[in-house]
Image (cartoon, rainbow over all chains, first blue to last red; front, side, top):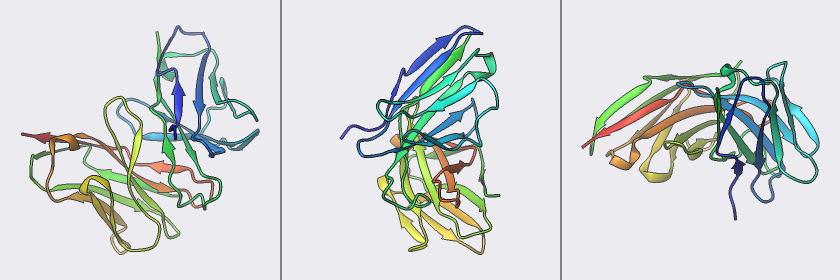
Length: 117
Length: 114
């Protein structure tokens, strides 16, 4: 049973380019979370998605950031016109929809480390 | 609003010594609490969780944590540190809106000296 798969593991973008980060949840999981980890900081929640729906995007920056989780395929976190401040590790997590979400374990991917030059 | 505070961004212990990583939470409702470990350039792995059952929770790799409501604490301990325990540790509280999103502390880096 493969875990949460994120790709790429490392991504370098020049300022102004677009970054696309992909996340395939664990088999059987249809709930996906994205977190951002800035250097020397803990993880900060960005967005929570179910298949074809954004449930909670309270942690997403208002501009340039978007996320989707289509019916088929991985979840995508998209950052347009990247700036140096976007450099961070972006983690995806998935959970089992059959359990109470407050108490259930979220399984994390290995992250995508974005560097903006 | 819920929050988590981890006291001490860096903790250093000798191999074989007690490990104590501190976590205090703030929550207006009974919390669900988690400890995750992150090895260099890796994702997060769950060590243990408290979901309102037993207050002393045992996890993987010999770690345990005790939920103390009166102290709003959920400190992580291990009786004897091993070199392989060197990593970053995160305490987190689950948002009780039932979305399952986690609110993380800033993390504690554990160094284990030979």
